[in-house]
Image (tube, rainbow, N blue to C red; front, side, top):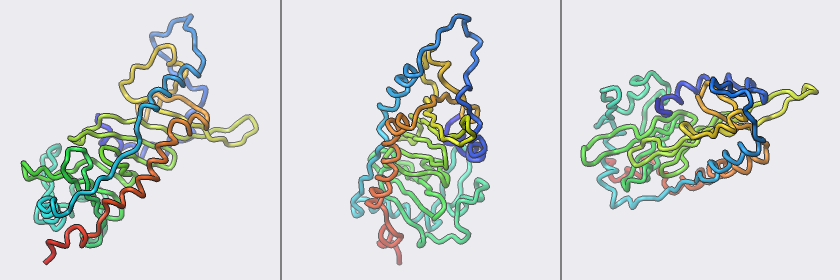
Length: 282
């Protein structure tokens, strides 16, 4: 199941999973041998470290020349003004943008639809060389793509109130204590996802302490000699390694830096309704 649909259901699962993972939790395997020798946790950390050090959490926001992209801007203008509709091939239905909530049974749209009140992101989200449109209604940053060859609009990626845009091809999901990094390709298909989260437990003195877990991407080839140093989270179907706060900062500190940088850099591709579509307002 793709994470873009699985994550929606997890929004209601993850918050109640906190404080349920113990450091003594280990995976039981039917293939376990009686004399299986455990390696030190540092060995498992080296495996996880190699994974995280290969990740580039930073995305780019490259503005388009508005004059050279007039045809795209005009098409998006027609979409948000309800002259064109979105196509959802997965559900075999079409709908106008103001019908988004009704189409999916959600509450992502403002009570009163008015495109002049929204903020827009106009840049190449997928890296295919054409401009995509982000529509920030104040609740959710909707991401729309336009296929000029087929003259069709569709959702570029399924977003929620937790979604943050890191730049071209890169997104994040931010919870209070859990975080996802997602990389998509030029077709907006996921090519890479990874999750890490904070949890808590009580020490021997009854004091609450914070603990840190780094996830291992799905379908990773996990060496057998480190599996017993990992925990398994049923809500995500992924394996995790408990790490120290220093190790957490070492490996995912750049993720949080990328969030801060993206907040600044996205301003270069952010427009008001008049700034982006003023040419077409009569």
